[in-house]
Amino acid sequence: MSVKENFDKIQSEIASICDRIGRDPASINVVAVTKYVSNERAKEAIDAGVVHLGENRAEGLAMKQEDIQEQVSWHFIGSLQSKKVKKVAPHISYLHSLDRVSLAKELDKRLDRELACFVQVNVSKEESKAGLDIEEVDEFIQELEAYPSLKIIGLMTMAPFVNDPEETRPIFKALKKIQLDIQAKNYSHAPCTELSMGMSNDYQVAIEEGATFIRIGTSLVGNEKKEGN
Ligand SMILES: *Cc1c(COP(=O)(O)O)cnc(C)c1O
Image (cartoon, rainbow, N blue to C red; front, side):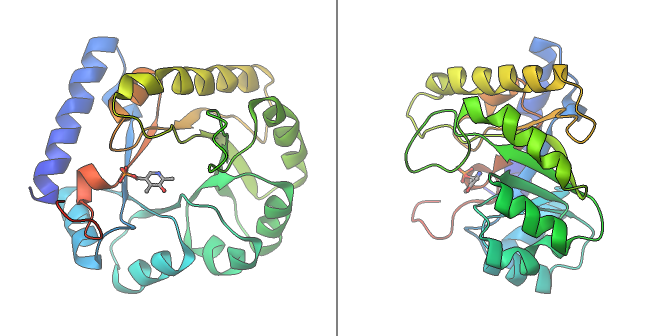
């Protein structure tokens, strides 16, 4: 299927889920994750109407940005090493993987404007996943007040890959709950109005549980690094 067909299908699915649960479809932002695909395929996504593009590595981001001149918002969704901050921070509008104070400090040093950040939470407690433990989130967000260029717009998580996406629901519910707890604190640097959750396998469930940014690679632009896509 073309990227356009995939995007249309995802859009109509978002519309029908939102209709069913009483959410505004405009509150859901689709981030096309282009890490597995060529610049051409990423451009097809833009032609199809995608306005958010996501990459998880500094090199991949640079490679896409060299070639893509269209006005889109760039998202960095992978673990960011402090030594790569200088290369990445000036070129993105959103960071989905803020997970330590040393990273916040380096970002704040390199930025001369505000950067929208998601604090990454390891809700599932998988060893292989980045992010803070649930119990650490509030204190971490309080510490971030010291870094004025960082605006904490929300929380991000990755659910484990499972065959039945329904199994991811408790993970997304838990992230929503943490978001409500943080919002109740009224931190001015951390309005925390957004939730970045849901990928190809589980975005429908994530939307039902309150996602406002869904990060979709395989189901939208495909995966040229894997056969059969
Ligand atoms: C790769 C990646 C995605 C997209 O994965 P798909 O399953 O291909 O949709 C989303 N979020 C993060 C953090 C990723 O690294």
